[in-house]
Image 1 (cartoon, helix red, strand yellow):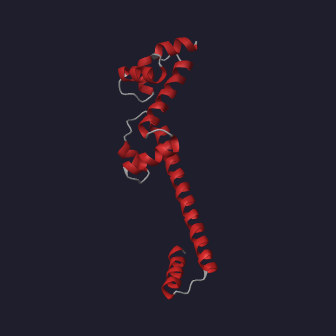
Image 2 (image 1 turned 30 degrees about the vertical axis):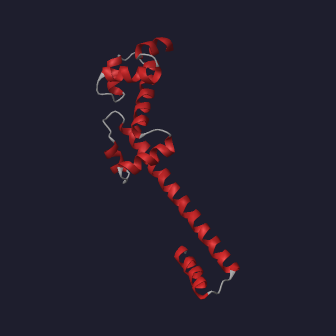
Length: 150
């Protein structure tokens, strides 16, 4: 539709036979088509991000890297990172860490599981990494968080 409308406008200009009403109609058609394409792209990107989030939430206990996530949703790592941040407000890495921390908070609140076990169940490969990351995101150690909750 867009190339056809552009061709009509160009042909009028080449022949010096300008019909302002017809040009206006063609411009409106072009604008409508561009708007539709933009909304389709937005819908596709939202579906891609929801698909990636679902993957993260189902695999957060395993190591997940950017390249793997981008391949999963058929995007380049750079484009995926940009779109993911646009829709979630977080980089993919930040989203994974936040999800893991929130999962750990639930375990700390609702179980007596050891902090070391919680770190593993939450997807952290070392309990020291878990403790430093947890403190960075909550300003409390996992132990302090648990004590406040009970």
